[in-house]
Every structure is written in C-alpha cells, then in structure tokens.
Image (cartoon, rainbow, N blue to C red; front, side, top):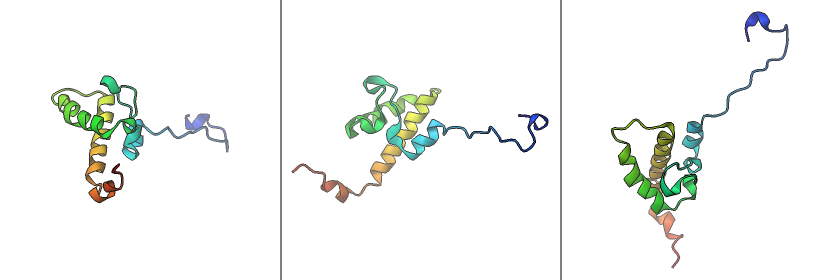
Length: 100
C-alpha cells in the first residue's frame, strides 16, 4: 500500500509470506514429494533406502544436459541431502537395527 493511502497510526495488513518449498526441503528432505515413476506422490521419507538409492543412481544422471523443472530441482536436492545424511551415519549406529 502506498504511503499516502495509509491511515494514520493504522494497523498494518502486512503478512509474511509462507516458506518456499525449497526451504522446507532443505530442513527436512523426507517431506519432498516424488513426482516421477512408480513412486509418484509419495514422500521421499516413506520410501525404503533401496528405492532412494535407485533414484539417486539412475534418475539424477538423466537430468544432465536437460533443463530441470522446479520439481526436478527439489527432488534432486532432497535426494542429495538423503545421500549426505547417509554418508554421515556411523555404521555402528546401524548395527542395533539388525534383525538377527
């Protein structure tokens, strides 16, 4: 609203914008929706590690030389965040999860 149209001492109608999806994914990659293949419309965090690894190893390379969509960029960032988190996990922490 222009300064000359504002009421004297009036309350502002300013509302901060909602967080863009990229910021939410940067904080939590598990909330990113997969938009491709048989995993479409499923949150990345709901997929098993094998499915996520397939997306990293097989889908990300297909983006080379193409102009990625916003959904492609979000999914790629989420998959890379997953891979980074996986690399930072201590293998001894995983031993307790073994079924035997």
